[in-house]
Image (cartoon, rainbow over all chains, first blue to last red; front, side, top):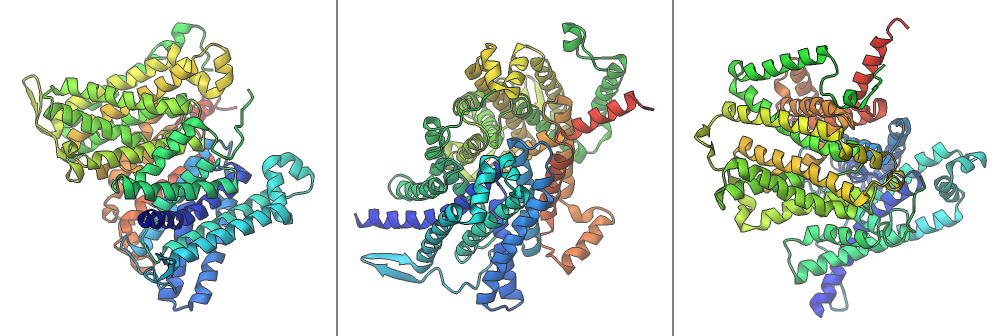
Length: 291
Length: 349
C-alpha cells in the first residue's frame, strides 16, 4: 500500500510536467490546428538561455528566469510571424513537417552551441531536497512543478473564460472569418497564442532542468505531453491535464508492478488503445467532416 | 499539355522516346558505375538505393493515400531483424528471408492500419510515432534479437554466388530497387492506386463511390510497411551489424522528410528526394572537411558556438530544408520540375 501511494505520487509528479507541455500544445492546436512538434525544443532553447544567463553572464536567478520566459514569448511570436504565417495551403501534414523542421533547427542550434553533454543548472531548488507529507517523501521540485502546473491551469482557464484576449482566441478558433468581421485581428491573435504556448512550455523546461539538462532532455516529455494532449482530445485544456496525470500514473504503476523496462513506452500503447475506442480523445466531441 | 487521351496512354511506362533514351543512359551509368567508383562511393550508392526503396513505400502511404506515418523506422527495424533472424535461426536463404521479413513488416503495417481507419492528422501521427518507438524498445529487450548488443549479419550467399564486397551487393541491390520502383509506379496506375488517391482527396466521397476504406487504407499501410521491411533487410547487410539504437525517431522523421522534399505523390520525386537527402546526410557527417565552407564553419564555431557540437549543423540544414520546402514549394522537387516543365512548354509566352 505504501509502495502504491508512493508510485501514485511519483506518477502525479511526472504528470505535472507532461501537463505543462500538453497544455502548451493544446493552446496552439485550439487556435490554429497545428500539432506543434517544436514545442519541446522551444522550451529547450529557453531553458538554455536561462542557463547561459546564469552561468556565463552571472545574472542573479530572480532576473535570469523571468528573462528566459520573456525570451520564450518572443521566440514563439517570432516563429509564428516568420514561418507559420508564411505557409501556403496549410494542411495537417504540411504543418507537421514545418514544425518538425523548426524542431530540428532549434535542436541543432542548441547542440551546436552547448554540445551534447549534461550541464548542471544552478537552479535555486536542488532535485534532492524533499519534504515529508505524511509518511511519504516528495521532492520539493516535484511539489513546485505540481504547483506551477495547477496555477497555469487555473490562470489559463480564467484567461480563456474572462479576458478579452482569451475570448478573442476562442472566437478565432471557432470561426476565423466571423472573428475578423467582428474586428479581431486574427493574425495577431495567432501570434499571441504562440507566445503564450511557448511560455507555458518553457516553464516545463525550466522545471525539468535541475534533473536533466542536455539537448535531448525535452524529447520524452514532449512526446508524452503530446500523447496526453491527444488523449484529452487536442482541443480541451482540462482534457490535456487529465490525460497527462493519467499517463503519468499509469506509467509509474506499470513500471512498479509489471515491467520497469517498458515503462517509457507503455504510454503509447495506452494511447493507441484509447484512440481505437475514442478516436477524438476523451474530452473532445467527435468531429465528423463533411465532403 | 500532358493530356491523356486513353487508358493505355495513362499506364504506359515511357511517355516519349526522350524518356526511353534518358532511362537507357541512366541504366548504363548504373551498370558501369561500380567498375569506376571507389568502395566508399559504392557503399554510398547502396545506402542511397535503400533509402529510395523505403521512401517510395512511404510515399505510397503519405503521398498517395494521404495518411501520416512517423513510425517507419519501426517497420525498417522489423525488416532488418526479421531477415537476419530468419537467416541465422531458421536457416532460410536470403532471397526467401528478405520477402518473408517484408511480409512480417506488412503484417504489422496492417495492424497499425486498423486504428488509422478512425484516426487522422495529429492522432494518427502520435499513434504511428508510438508504434515506432515501441518496436525499437521491444527489440532491444529480447535476447533472441541480441538485445542492446545488436546482431552481426551472416555471410551472404545467393546460390553459389558469395556476396562479399559492397560491389557484389550493389549488383543485387540496384536491380531490386528498380524492380520495386517499377512495381510501385505500376501499382499506382491500377485500381488500387486510383482508390488510394481517391481516399486521399476525399475520404467520404471515395466511400460513397464504392471504395472499401478499410481494405484500401490497411492495404496502403501494409504495402508501405513491406517496402520499409525489404529496405530494412537490405540495410542490415549494408551495415553488416544492427542494433536497436539505429532505428530512432529521427530515422522515421528523415524518411518523411525525404518524401516531402522529393514531392508527395510522385515516384520520381521520391527517388530524387531520397538520393538528395541521403547524399547530404553522408556529406554533412564530416562537414568540417568540406573545402572553404569547413574552414569558415570551424572559425564560426570557435567564435560563437562549440567545436564539439559542430556535427549538429546537419540537423539545422535538414530542418531548414524542410521548412523552406514547405513554405515555398509544398510539392517539393517534383513541384519545381512541374513548374519548370510548364514554363518551358509555353516558353516565350
